[in-house]
Image (cartoon, rainbow, N blue to C red; front, side, top):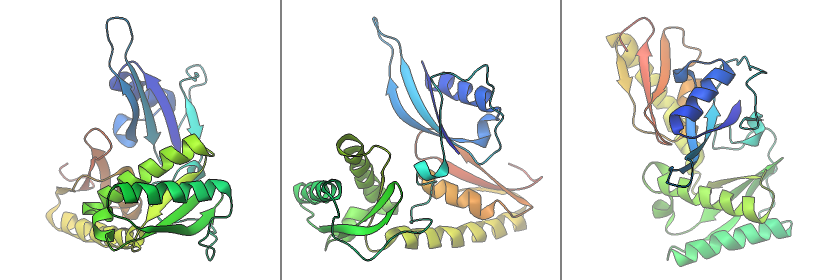
Length: 247
């Protein structure tokens, strides 16, 4: 599930999330949505998004307007490839919103001097996938997909301000999302084998929330392996450790 909380500081917002959801701090991931420092005439403000698989016990006395709950379908659920029953086969825009979104993305690529053709890859309820075809795909994807993530963020900001804020945009190029997921799943199992051999722990590279989620869910059913996220901000690291072994 996905939740939103607010506070005067990041710590206050996180503490509020832990209290209202009845969870330990290391049992959920946090993404900072907004952050404004306090000044002489204004209070600080931080808005966070909380991601967790753990069962929550909401405190009805604590639930306020600072709290918002989403179902898995309201976000990408940390998965980058389409879920459910996506509709493929029609790459052309079906309405003005899709047309404007494609025009925006192609214009953005042109201004970056990495032009490309953008088309619809799939459609789902409250979700649309866009595909970039460009001779500069490797640059647009970037190291570990960071450039593609940044472009996807811009696409979602545009969609929220110029269409339906509930529609999520998934941006891909050269099937990077699927290939990345396959590689992460293989890596997760290999890391689990090494951790089991050493009875220790391994700290993975910084990852976005969606990649971290994939690591957590891949290893979740392995009885002697545990995972947890460490660090602050959007790009955190996942620690894989032997259950009962050193953390």
